[in-house]
Amino acid sequence: MYDYACQNWLATIVGVHTSQKLIALTFDDGPHPAFTPRLLELLAQYRARATFFMVGQHVEQWPNLARQVVQAGHEAGNHTFTHSRLVGRTPWAVAGELLRCKRAIRRATGVSPRLMRPPEGKQDVIAFLTARLLGYRVVHWSASAFDWRGDPAEVVTRRVLSGVGRGAIVLMHDGVTPSPGRQTVVSPDRTPTLKALPGVLGRIREKGYRFVTVSELLHTAPLIRESWFVM
Ligand SMILES: [Zn+2]
Picture 1 (cartoon, rainbow, N blue to C red):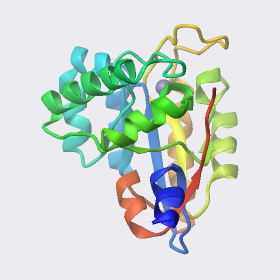
Picture 2: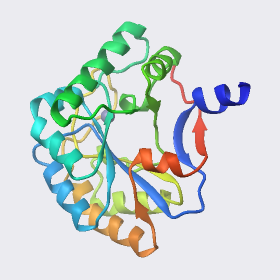
Picture 3: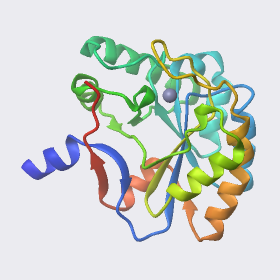
Picture 4: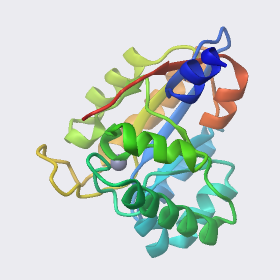
């Protein structure tokens, strides 16, 4: 009981321990009318499945895109309704964000998300516990493309390729979301990500890896977890 509670229930997931060549690509902040359709084409070309942590208000605005993502075999995750920070919020405010996003995803796709990723990866204990009590697994990442910085595609490619390995969860973005209160500047252009992807997908696949959804990855092997909180 102790082991389960501390090792699994109270853990933010960043990957799995596996000897299999499996990688879960994740794309946050979408759907986006310019970038998501191009991303779906690329993923189909490379027969890669991925997980999309969607922002509820974007799903409400472009429900057909959200539906296309799920119909193509990808997984939809909950990334809150407005993409505002969950740190310092009441449990009711956090629950409201998650429930509104879930409703939008379910209405658009017919599927309820089981995974949640806090905006900017930032959470406090209240946000984390609220998500867990609503039945979500909280998922961060083991490698980030930092593609919101506006770096050229070659830099994004190098960063992803140097960060991936067996059981990795990779963070990239197909959407654009202004984060209220965020101090860093976020590039509104996901073209570098899309330009980087053929190289990234091709080279990782050449090494014998398969691209799976996060839920599939979590079923294959013991979790790599961490407690990652911003107070
Ligand atoms: Zn985000």
